[in-house]
Length: 274
Picture 1 (cartoon, rainbow, N blue to C red):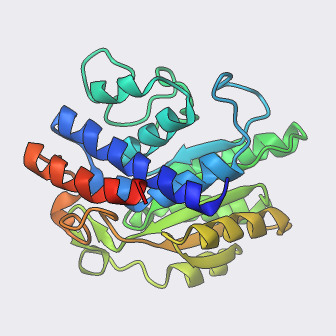
Picture 2: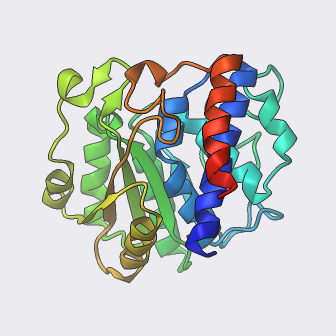
């Protein structure tokens, strides 16, 4: 897909996020919006998936370790055709398929149920090891929050991935600098992220997480690198695309009201129609 089309797709996914959260009256916009461009490139340009066959054995896998960013993933999967977009308006409704965190048993296209922070990279390791053992060509992607990497299990998984030379594994760090209680630096400093992954034996690529061309090039590079997993440290903006949400920690887990929804969608639609 051409980059202009990818940009339009990312804008539409952001609209999906705003609409579903406003309808639900709860959820996490900030971190969903910050990783939208990453999800767009993966699902519409890089990952080998079949929406009509969600459990296809040879598909590429994605583990959303920061599971509270589920609206971003749901908005992407619906746009890709894994399920009808009408389902987005049932977010967090009792008995429906789209809950507050991803559920692999109930939602087509979800490869792992996540939500307990720090665990997703370990699961992605397991998928990547399975691919090696089964001599499969699929690739495994994980998305971790930068606040999430304060969890010790992330670094146990990082050590393990390097030990097993999981060159079929790529993790994105959504480096938006904010978490639920404030800035990362105030809560528990995580910098320098890239140097830490390098010390654990990973290839590291640092990019602008909203530059579609940089995201695409980083994924392509990761595919060529051998004997090590790849960490793509993506500098992002929490709430990206909605002016009053950008870099505001208060939008970590607050849904927009009707007036805010209309303002946000108006801003985003200007980009869609460009």
